[in-house]
Image (tube, rainbow, N blue to C red; front, side, top):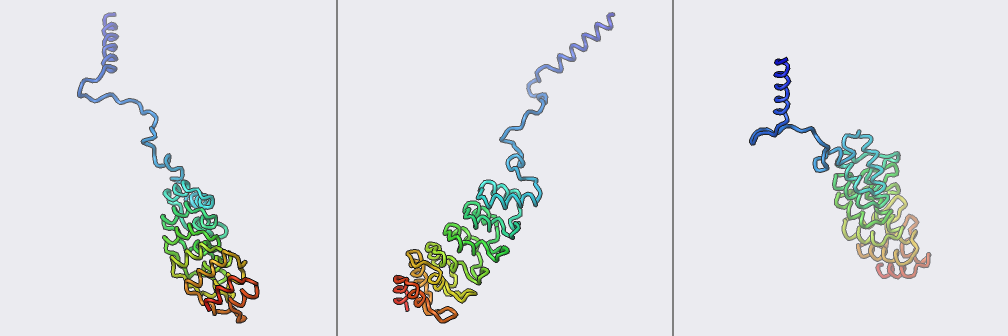
Length: 251
């Protein structure tokens, strides 16, 4: 009976020692791990795309770029999404961002090194598409990537030719001022930008501004189409009086 009491008392002393406060200078008892704070979150928690497959990342980047989702585009780039992934029409994320004029997403892609010369199935590049959209803001972003301005579209034209057709006066003026694009380039139809502005334009103020910008940049008004018809002759035939006057003074 006495030995049982001694054992019980010893156990109580040991239990008390195990829960007693640590002595000053001694190691504190290790506590159970608690929930992780936001300050110490892992990369996968900060970026939901870390660890995804290359294919998943590429498809997500195509969607984010087309929507213009700048934040998601940046996350995907940081997660090493393939920048030159292609959709069914061989469009890259940058080409999709340019097509939909999503400037912020395009800026992220350009900064990451996306190719401004990547051709799609229509022989368009991101730079060539700016001539269709007429976006000066996008052209400014893409010029930082040093695009090849000599690549031709499926009609054999450079970016300022479709822009001249569509009346994108601000774009034409910007490109002529900030690049060395060949003003008198002739496309596969036999037309220069000046001819296209007259033949396919409406003769109103935007096209008048385009003709003025082209002439100021050194466009040759004597270059005729394949039938020998000059821009001035086309302008007169279409009743574009003001444009005809501009061309007559430059001839």
